[in-house]
Amino acid sequence: MAKIRVKNLLLRTYIGFNPDELVNKQDVVINLEIEAPVPESALESDEPNGIYDYKLVTKKVIAHVQDGHFKLLEVLTSNLLNMIMEDDRVTYAKVEVDKPHALRFAESVSYEMEARR
Image (cartoon, rainbow, N blue to C red; front, side):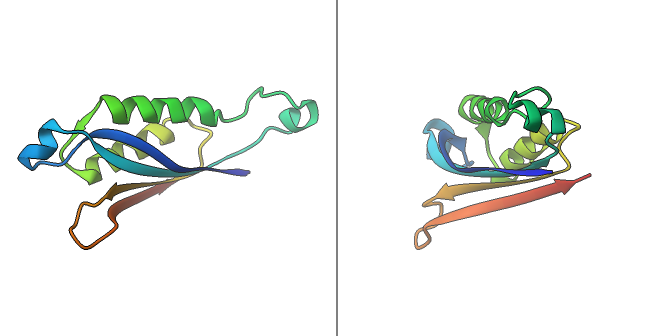
């Protein structure tokens, strides 16, 4: 079993429901933690056959976030978690989405969700 972490993926999207948030993109910072098996054959051959492709899932996350419009941080986080869990090889996933400067005196507000099978 391998644990894959994608750290501090900085993207821009429409997030929020205040009037200015509906028309202006904002930064979000995404952290992913994914557990999936690594086939013994991949370790022996040093070839990517059968491995969980973190580059592919990261590209899907980027497209979903940058092309989307979300009122709730909770919905964005849930969407990303569900996207990751679509792959049957994933046994555990955790998604954290930070919205920097969402509150006046805080560095950021984040929402975190996880799933296990």
